[in-house]
Length: 415
Length: 174
Image 1 (cartoon, rainbow over the protein chains, first blue to last red):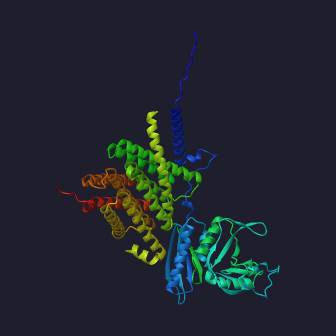
Image 2 (cartoon, one colour):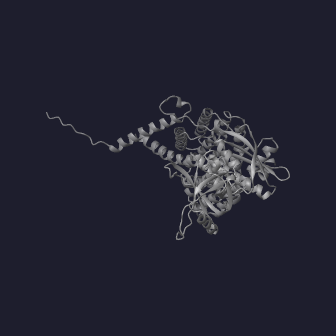
């Protein structure tokens, strides 16, 4: 008797679907485990604790004394300081004007932030007035017993070439190579067209010599490049910038480009304050949100406010969106404000329910949502901008989660 | 009134202008989106009135909370108008979706649209109420007040929208 073995042609589509469903289930469960609080204690190999900003916040009030009584100058100073702090990402800024003595005015700048204190202080206390200066003939800059002569403004003669000469100061994002082989950031000064002739004359007269850029009290020396009459473009003034980290360079970039403070001022006193930010325990937050979302969907299901399919899809999409988002935050160690996180989670839950319920409104909701939060991210001040940026990420996650959930629920029934 | 005095005297012009521009651009973007999708003038006027009403309700409730209940309107309440605007946008978008799905571009079925508004109003009110109630038991004081006040404003705005609807969309007789 001959034995015939027949092999059935495998159903590759079914095999692939099963494999993808299994993979997705594994991803869902893993991201849920990562997102849940206290699960970071399970593994020693990967650290994924939620990096909350709550313990990093500090608060101070700075008293600035301005050498003016002119309302216009006081308001301009206020605007520039606010703009500096906003661009740096300081979460809360309040600036109050008070009367000083006969010739002075007082600005009280209060900050509540998680940013580096020294850099915030630099942004508040530095006027950052810069001008080109030339060396005094009588000063010995080579004196080994006085190596710091090179940086003090009193050893230089002022010129008329100050910040009004320049339309922009640009600090490239990447470090450039110096003559001694090191890599450093540089500031490139771009002059105004109307001042080009004046600057060109100065550079021609001082070519090959070391002059300086005085910023407030200290001078950064630079060598004036040699150039000939045939050169049509005036060479840019470039000075090294002594910052090491990206944050320090960002602060310096802001100082150069946030505007010109019109008056001299000084910081006369700073006071530490109690941090005035709402902090939440993220374990309680996760628990309370979990209970809230389950209760809400159970109610909607029991009282048949929407169809069962809509509610299940919406619930799973919400769960997936939030677990993906929290996993992403935990694995990337992005610092978060726990209170803003609570509000974001509630808002995205309502958003997802609306998308799942109204498929025809999806385009308006997703694109409209991104545009609305984009506007808030650009124009909102302090923590509003941070809130909006996270909402844009949540909308993107929700779109992905909806596609996965919809596919998953459709195919799991068939398997 | 201390709230307005604080904004007037202590906010910088940059803050005042950028936040005003922000809200105006948000409304403009939403109106543009709705116009592109359904090209219905009544809907545009309804949406504009809805956002105006939301602004008035938010301001009044915060004022009343500050004056009558002596609740301090702190920095976190800057989020309240944004949340109200976003939920208002979601609410109106849900009705736009229904409008498109029932192909009402040429003939608006006012009764069906009103029924849809009623269903959506109930859904949002229940969702916001249940979420807020569940959260406030676990959160501390300033957060609780913020959630309660913002929830009240959202629910009020939603129902004002529902009652504004017949003013713009009247059932044709005969």
